[in-house]
Length: 483
Image (spheres, rainbow, N blue to C red):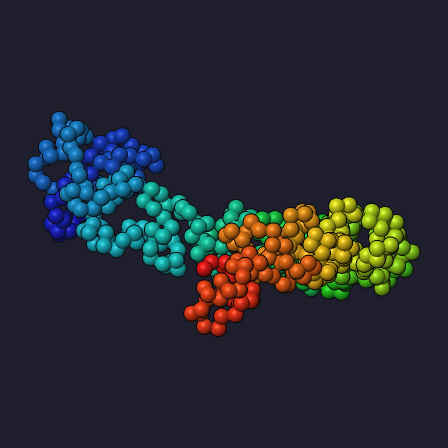
């Protein structure tokens, strides 16, 4: 190393250089042939050339050497590179020989300022940028996590691509040249395209966009995106040539009957063709299997016991169109043969759903809310024969519920809501004590019990304006029976 260059080095760097040069003799003695075996940082591989002169090293040789020879280095010699220089040596740099950086090329600081390229040749010819740490670290030159970094490019590596050798797509990889690689499938897979004969890709014009059918995991099990006709159920397991019967894969039918006409023609339970069934198979069938079929009975929803009835029970003779939807069309015999109560004899309507459900005929439940007929429609004879009091002779209304309940006829209670005179002491009186006119319960008498002569009553009311000695006048002033 030139003296002028050494004179520019600061003391910490001189100390490191001194250590390396002081051990150089030992390095040469240990490795006189200059082998490629690694040596400690303080020593030197003789194949790297002669040692650097000590001309400007500190004059105190004992800083590094000890003993009577130049090959022995002090055991206590320790140089803290990070503390003394401010630069920490990490990874492979910590194992490198000091003289690899501290040599006669010039001040080490000049090269350190250039970053990695100050010491390491850019084999990529500046085509991948100057940030070596994007791919390399200080442990080794071997790139790490390249698949993850590759995913940031326009061609992420997935499936088999992630396991392929770089040189398969980058022919210049051995020379660290990764430029100009195509991202088109055909540029790498032209030979695969030429071998694809089942079906014949070239004949079909399938020479681009391999990803429409293939994935990067494997060529086998290609899966075309059947967006126009989604493959579900059995369709997903059917060979392509079952539907694509010609060389042109664009002319396959998309209607069920296009492939299943023979199935439609053979179906005899029920006979589809004879019954005029629609050829829109998905109305009853799905892609899992032809049976069991499930027709959507939207015009006549099947519930309860109807769901367990065979189609032929209603569609007799293979007739599936124009059938009546009223209950009696199928259940007229049940209607006529019902004895308890006798539906036909009593004139019950044939709208069975008013009392019955599709679960079963028994436990019928008639909704009386819609019955508008009054009690007398059923109880006219009871009304006519009642003589205590005589309802008909007394002109009682036929709205039986005003006095009677549905539990029993006895113990009838008239609601004197309009005539609250039945409260208090009057509540214990028998009806005929007030209603003294036999058969006429509209008439009542107050004077038959109170003030039995008009003279005394007149004297009691001589100051009451409009007073009249009649029962109706009494009730007008004493509606509750109080004075």
